[in-house]
Structure formats: structure tokens, C-alpha cells
Image (cartoon, rainbow, N blue to C red):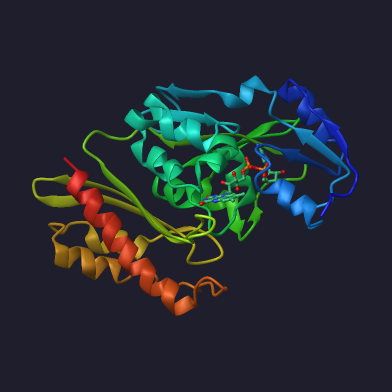
Length: 291
Ligand SMILES: Cc1cc2nc3c(=O)[nH]c(=O)nc-3n(C[C@H](O)[C@H](O)[C@H](O)COP(=O)(O)OP(=O)(O)OC[C@H]3O[C@@H](n4cnc5c(N)ncnc54)[C@H](O)[C@@H]3O)c2cc1C
């Protein structure tokens, strides 16, 4: 189908973009991987499309030694593509979990064009980044013509395809911690074979000291309307030796108390079962990489 007629602007500065969206009924365009299909199906019919792709300020990927996280942070501009994140030497060395998640998205064509800001703002319940961003306790930096604010990822994503973004607000950057040395990580997903989207996807970060697991973070996507941190799993594994039995016992809790999705790809029961399996796989690999 052909989208409804719309006005198109391609500003070159953030200030100009914010002024354009403040006029109302505008949709911003990043990679267009999700927005263009929605417009073609007329599920979105904005009067004005504001293309962000010429705004250099939104492309920066850099490290900041202070501020958001005690050990330093990586700031990923909203327009950083999945491929840039997957292949960046900085991200691979300072936040390898995020690079691993990005490398699992769709196919190379999608990764070349899709952006972290677009994916996070779209909040698809089967998207990959939310699992990693939950496990990383990431922050989302938002901006309007009138001011800025930063929200933790679990407050930014409200529900399926629903976020805390206000109408005139943009995602400016995603902020993740510089990983502590010795942290093991893993992203494991059961991919929907046609698109690559996660039927379920599990991201894990772990640390060990003196034979005990001292730190566990687990983020789950695909199971429910909103990605979440599997805190029951984290609590059960912390303090154990991280043996195979400990992992199985903790992973068995990954889907507990969650209202699981059913769709044409998987029933709620299958998703719950796969969440336990993929949580165990993610924890096993993360622990094997922790040193
Ligand atoms: C064939 C195919 C396979 C895919 N497979 C996967 C997969 O396996 N895993 C996965 O996670 N994703 C997958 N995707 C989705 C892909 O990752 C998209 O890149 C992503 O969902 C949207 O990013 P985008 O940059 O294309 O955003 P766009 O489509 O341009 O925008 C999406 C939405 O976000 C808004 N938006 C964009 N940027 C901003 C911003 N800076 N601030 C505020 N709002 C903004 C737009 O207005 C729009 O509402 C797939 C997509 C396709 C087409």
C-alpha cells in the first residue's frame, strides 16, 4: 500500500528538528524499518515526517568517565545503527553485551539501517535491545525544545509499543555502564525464523568472586508485553557457586508471575518454557565468560 500524503523535512540540527516536531502531528523518522511499514499499512498517518538522519549530533558514540554510572558510561546517540553498535571497537570492549545484542538483530540489511533510538522508541515487545538494556540498567536521555530529562529503561518502556515519550520529545541518547572488569555476559534468543525478532530473548551479566556469584542481572524480552528484569532469578543465583544445578534452579523462576504473550509464533506456555531454557543458556555462557 502507499502511505497517506505527508510533508517531509530533513533538518540538519537538533534544535531545528525539535522546533518542527513542536508544531504537532509530526513523526520522526530514523531508520524507517518500523515506521515506513506502519505508514504503508496506514496504521500511522502523520501529516509531517521529520527525518533525523542528517543530524550529526545524534550519531555520536562516546565514553564519559563520570556522571550516570560510577564506573563511567557509554553514550550511544539515537541514530547509532545496530551495525555501528555491533562493530564499534569502543562498545565491544566497554559494553560487550550491547554489541552482542545488536549483532543478533534481524539481518545485515536491517542492522545497517535500523537505529538504537528508533528501536527503543518503538518498544516492540519482541525487540532485542530491551533485554540487554534491562540487564544493563540503561538510561534513556530525552530532549524537547524546552528541556531534557533522563529515565531508567524500565520507566521509559511502559508496555507493548508504548513508552514514556511525550509528543514533542525525542530520544537523544541511550546511556549504558562501562562494564566492570571480569563481568561475564551473554545474549541468547529463540529467533522467529522469518524476521529474526525474539520469540524470547534473554540477556545476562554476572560476576564471581572467591567461588561465589556476587552479581547477577537478567533481562528478558519477547515473553510479555514489556521487557523486564528477572529479579527472582537474580536473587536465587546470587551467593551460590553458580553450578549447573544452581543455574537450573534459578532459571526455573524466569517466567514466574509473568503474563505471557500468545501469538501466531508461540503460545504463552511455550514462551514460558523457552524463557527458562534460554535463561539457563544465557547464565551458563555468562558464567563461563566471567573471570
Ligand atoms: C525485516 C525486519 C526484521 C527485523 N528484525 C528485528 C530483530 O530481529 N530484532 C529487533 O530488535 N528488531 C528487528 N527489526 C526492527 C529494527 O530493529 C528497527 O530498526 C527498529 O525497530 C526501528 O528502528 P528504526 O531506526 O528503523 O526506527 P523508525 O522505523 O524510523 O522509527 C520507529 C519509531 O520510533 C520513532 N523514533 C525513531 N527515532 C526516534 C527518536 N530518536 N526519538 C523518538 N522517537 C523516535 C519513530 O517516530 C517511530 O514511531 C526488524 C525490522 C525489519 C523490517
